[in-house]
Length: 388
Image (cartoon, rainbow, N blue to C red):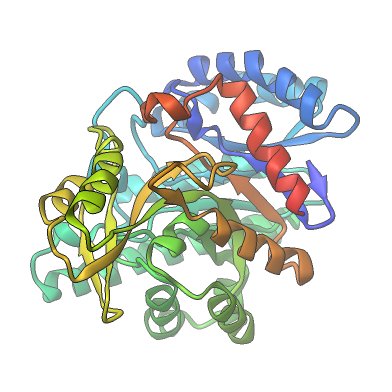
């Protein structure tokens, strides 16, 4: 839905259907309910996530035209897509495979260009479109800096190939679509600083036309991911604006956080609460803050729990997208205040037109946080609307 601060939607990576028929079925059953509650008198946007398989199937036969007709009938529109997870994202062990295939591969390029084609045909004429994507690759897959450097240059060349494809669409149709790189813990680009350094020192020097890159390659500001790294939102957003690097989308999401007491009894009680979020489907990277301000990074919650007796650590933040309308969960909290801070910056001085709530973990949440899915989506979007 269109707000003063931009187009607000939710990401359909919350739905389990991986082929197009299954994904369309759940959209047809849920979207009319959501729109009636959230935007009864105006069109409502959809943040579309398609697996590789669904993207192939949607372009077969008359599926895309049927979907366009359904959108027009229901008062829906697609302006942003999630092109990060390539394969299965529910009912299977995802973990680090969420990065596969990475940006060094032709499969990632072909998949993304397919999403570009779909979005170019769905995007309303008066809007920009965006596709969020992975941060090049996953650091633990590369044991030496030489291999990581080579992969970075290979991935960058492939991203430039997609940027050129996006520019061809702009030249032919006037539609602006951007690829929004999404930093994530343990990704090749896992922070605002790493993204900016890659953009300025590797991406821009690899092209002749910097304006093409700045139009079509942007940052996806996933608030959960930036909050996990204790990043200063105001300073990062200001620096990006000063450098002319655009933020294509805010992904509105909350991470877990917890203060770890020095008392063993109190500390164990907090850790027991955190252990309930250790589940086998998704990566839950942890960044721990020591009492001297330095950070320790763990690839998953299990590894952090194994070193939980490090009393030099005073706080954990964990990559587990929890409902954004919940801040206090007893002995642990969420990074909801980071969302409020970023949305207040957006409200005061808008820096993107795309706002997407991305809580995809409903199926694996502890029972106390679970609720009917449509009710949860409505509650999340209403919470954002009240801030904006």
